[in-house]
Structure formats: C-alpha cells, structure tokens
Length: 360
Image (cartoon, rainbow, N blue to C red; front, side):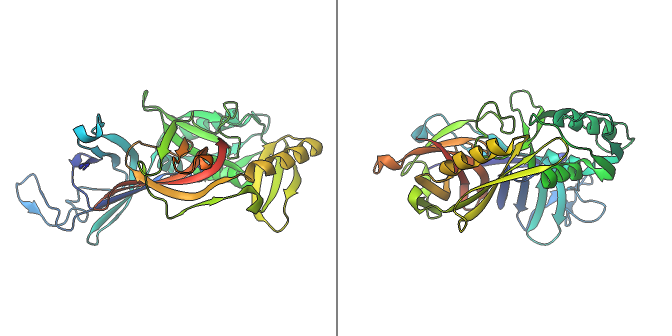
C-alpha cells in the first residue's frame, strides 16, 4: 500500500497536513488553479507563545493574499513499488483568496496571477513590431517602465505570425492576452522549467498538430505509458468510439497581418462544432487543410477522461500511450488537454482528459 506524503509552503509557514488539495491545469486556461483545504482545528502559537484562535483573520493572520505557495506531494518510498520519489512539486503560485469559514480553504493561482497585476498605461503598435513574439516583448517593456507592481520576467515562446494594429489603454497584461485569444484564437499559459526554475509564457494556437516540434505552442512533451489494470484505476468517464460513428463540423479560420479572416468548412454540417485557427493561409490551402483535418478528428479511439495514481506526474501538453492487453487494437497515443490533481482523504489521484489521438 502506498502511503501519502505532502509538504505545503505558504509564505513563511510550512505544514505537512491537509484535508484536500485540488489542482486544475489546462492549455485552455491562462492560470492553473489550486484549492487547499486545511483542517478545522488548525492552530498555531504566536511569538508570545500563546495559541492563536484565528489564523486567517485579524492582525495575527498567518496566510494572506499574495503569499507565495508551493505544494509538494508524493508517496513514502516503498519496496513493494520500487524506487518512488518522495515528492514532486505539483503546484507553485500565489494565494488569491482565503475563506475564513471552517474548514479553511485557500484559493491559489500559478505565476500567471502576476500577469493580472501588470498594468499597461498605453501601447500603440504603430510603426513598432508586428511579429507576435516581438510584440509580446514590447508590451512587457511597457509594463517594466511603470513604477510599482510586479515586473515581467518571463521567457516568451510564441507562434510565428504577425499581428494587426494593436492599441492598449489602461489594461493589464492578462487582458492583453485575452484580447489575443478573442481576436486570433491564440491561447496562453505559463510553464516552469524544472531544471532551470525559469517560467516561460507560451502563446499560440491549440490545434491537433500542436505536438509537432515546429509548432511553438506546446511545451516539449513528456510521453507516458499507461496500462489498464495497472495504472488506470477508474475509466468510468472514458468511452471508445469508432471513426464511422463520429460526426464533426470543422471550421478552419485563417487570420492575416491586418486581422482579415478567411474560413473553410468541412465534415458533417450536423456534427459537433470545432474551430481551428491558422495564420496567413490562402483560401485554397485553408480548404485543403480543413478537408485533411476532418480525417484526424474521425479516429478509432478513446474520448473522455480516466483516473490514475499520483505517479507518474503528468501535465497538459504531455502525451500518453494507452496500453490494453485484453484488446490490443484499442491501444494508441493521445495528447492531454487537461489534468486535475487531487490529494487528501481520497488518496492521490490524477484525472486525465484526452485530446486527439496522434499515433497507434
């Protein structure tokens, strides 16, 4: 039996007991979120040696909005399961909200939280850069020219494309990224390089080809092999469908330097709608892309989500090779679009949401 172990760091305090932790991470979200629930009867002793009754209210509150947060979780080493790392860091970020009710819940967001606090007084692309990555850096320079507030210190990796005229007034960097999402279909998230500790802001298209090494949107993928009966412990939300049973209505949208749009449709008009975004395609090439992409969505394979233990550690943008010894022809490799991690009274679990199948 695997025995759970965790360590939570909030501000100057650390503790190894929680009621529950839930972390939600997806390439469709700018900020990963973390909810930490701590026991009702938690107490601490102040500098005067006296036990304090209220730890999140009043002048003696120990947890405050803006505190840095780190969550490490894992299992005690067990000979039964071989060499198991004691901890993985499964979340880093900041406290955004604290509920004073019992049990106490602490809401957190990853380092993208700071993007909501980076204010841009004014920006006009004018004769400035039109390349997306260069524009992201130019707007970051506007942030860093302000006094007060957090500085923009992230590395940037963005889709190779030009952006039309852009004017910003009294906004935040997060609102700028939301503008790119609404106008161009560009999605953004931050990922930490565990080897260097550096945060990188990724901005690009989320599409079926995102695992291609030439596409800058996805972090270099980890590839994990998971097997029914060994790693997958709950598949009640997982279904298997044949390609001939899939109806998809696909719209491919291309945006040029001046924010002009072209559209091409393919598939089944009555099918489930899906949009894919591209840059500076001709009408002919866009239609060809749409026709070819439909076939990629109509695949024999799994849809939905399934649950595994807390190890191996997986994240959105990774890929999983699903093994099924009983039905070998259902095996295949899939991209992950979302991962929900839960730690606490129910054990240490990861719910994995599948995107498209990318190989057999």
